[in-house]
Image 1 (cartoon, protein in one colour):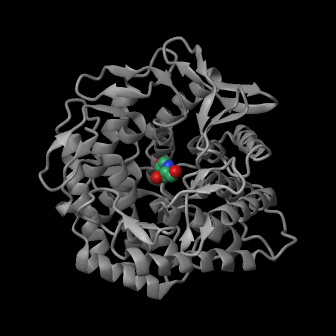
Image 2 (cartoon, rainbow, N blue to C red):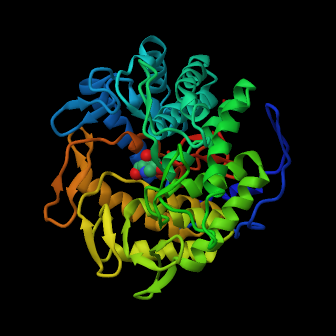
Length: 473
Ligand code: DMJ
């Protein structure tokens, strides 16, 4: 089988008009992708297996948890993510794009039917995070709309974004408050973290484009600028900030959570909307990270935390979630560092079968032994494969698929692992919402030659939601 000629998604050229915002297209960072290696193996059976695992878990979700936010596959129950008294079908929303790509059209129709008849996000009577609501609900619905053209999905995405928007517009700095109660409209949380301030523009910008209203894009961009403007003389940003006063509350600079996807969305805003301000901000902050935080340790490339004022190291404990950064570096023109950083994470798999949630690369030990069915390692494998076409990334992703399946598969689907260091592994009881939108999609796209996906021109959000690249039939 021939590889599907993956090319960098930055080969996209064109001019987008976004409400009042006109973005001029420019060629992206890396000039061209490597010629993809011819694969010596037939990956299609692996794609079929991924699809069948997702379908099987969907059937369990239907049986035990339909309309609830998340399946508990071990106990055969459910849990809610936002409000314990008010489900919003989170797993359905997160699965929409993946179901479309996999051609699971009956399941997709069922999911859309549930959303049309039942979704009422304004009924949530709890303080919800703007960030989680945006990447999971707004993003999932927008992606579903782009896949299917079902108007109810766009209408619901807009309704939810309208609940979030006052968190930005009432803020004295433009950085959003962290929480909102959708039922009462009460806003709270003046201390926020960078990932939650800055992981907005892909969804809000896509919404702006679709509804021809640039308020969403402008609010998201203003929040990013407010952080960028408060960078230190070293061009480093901290982790937490008071969004009312603009004073830093946590001055540790890191690519780890709770900052991680802040950097991702600076690049993604450029990637999607060709807004050169965002690229400039991304390039400036990334140059400082590479200068002050990148280190070679134990023969691998890693990133330590640093004081934003002095650049002094604050330690080598890192998070599995940060494995996504390898793909981001590759996408943004730092391919050698990205590939080396991916290798660092691969080296952890010599010690642990699956990546633990927390890891100290200084001591080579897990600091949190759980595995919440995380997608980040596969996310980077997918992106590096798209960029380079190198078969090694499919091999790595396949190895991880086999191991995660061996550990996480239970009778009713896939579950989180409570401890990756015990034999047999201790299991938890949850199919995380992002499992539906992220790694199952990455694995499927890598192995399927999916006819519903444009491998040459695409965009996937931090939650794996496709905002560009669906091929509609
Ligand atoms: C996902 O919700 C998103 O990828 C987010 O940016 C952080 N990580 C989780 C999954 O681990």
